[in-house]
Image 1 (spheres, each protein chain N blue to C red):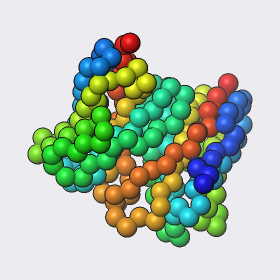
Image 2 (image 1 turned 90 degrees about the vertical axis):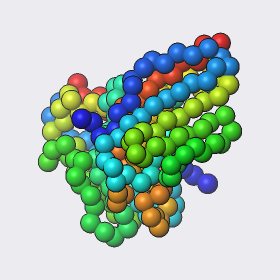
Image 3 (image 1 turned 60 degrees about the vertical axis):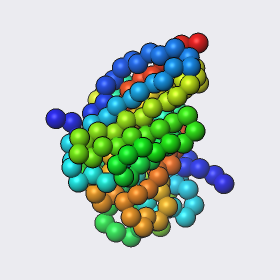
Image 4 (image 1 turned 135 degrees about the horizontal axis):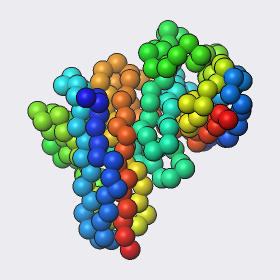
Length: 116
Length: 110
């Protein structure tokens, strides 16, 4: 079956523009995560969606970042008024319906964002 | 102090040797521990998970967990050049948030 997909794979934008990044999780997975990975760094947690529950937004770095998940499936991460420090790889991951905090995250290929 | 710490490396080992990757974490209540492998330009993939103290073996990989010392490690036996990658330690601190370390770069020399 299909894995997690993300689009676009690469995005170059000018400082101050808004960008939208898309994630299609594995069908049937109820949990979805967004991470940011800067060059040579680990994964920085951004936001977590689980079913119809309120998302955990504790990792969003500023109010320029927002995310939504429509219909419990596709998610969009929006960055408004992009800054050069937003340049990074944005990774999406999904997990099956969690029965505990023991879970495997399946990652998408990422979107490489470059803000000029 | 970072929540999950790893030596950034690079760790260089000859082919056939044992590679030892280490990770410490700060939250004593952590319950689930994961090792992900990330090849350059690719996304992370899970290679090992461990939940209780002791060793867990899977093929050439062994994960070791010591909750008292807040320490988790990954041993790779008979290292191969194809094992060259960045290895990310990840810790679930409760709920559904997983904290990742910055990763250790491993080079296996042929």
